[in-house]
Image 1 (tube, rainbow, N blue to C red):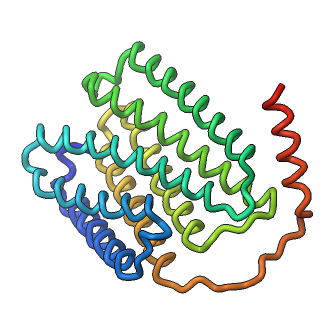
Image 2 (cartoon, rainbow, N blue to C red):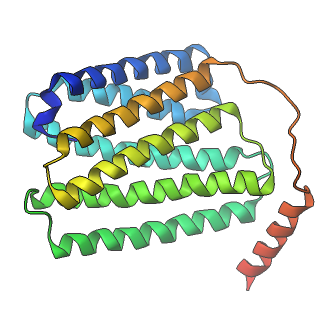
Length: 251
């Protein structure tokens, strides 16, 4: 998040650690040619590395840093959505109707939270924050809530229907959830209480990104164990759900 606290030693150390982890992660992905099976995540990782290097280079020029940061956040949010959709698509027994319901739910949720963000802007920002950063933080907060909801729905579907996720997808989902929760906490509290706790919240946000990169690196480095999926849920259950949802959507 653009602010003067980015110049402190602890924040810069965490930031450099994150850039280093992203660089290693990108190298591992391309070394193992995982971009063939994880195109969205590979694009996100490479883009994140290039963005962080760019931000590091322009950090002393606040105006350039500010607009570069928020433009890059917009790009990364769309890439996050692509990653989530890609994970849904990779579920081994995911039925088209289930995907349709999830997609429609996410669109509705996004619209609702966008309206809430607009309402927050209309009522006015915190006195410590100018209007443009407040608008951007409100929008990012809405996207983070939708993103966390989509990840929660993903885990619920997997465990409710007894589906199997790959090691890559489990690691990506957990890391993305941690990073999204940290960002959501930061933008929500800064927008609510102002910049009084910005130093701590910025560290939390960067630490969430570092933790996510660490989890992702472990997920792509450690070979996935091949074992038969064990599930106590009858395989017919998801077919029944698919038929019921299909009938409901056709009404």
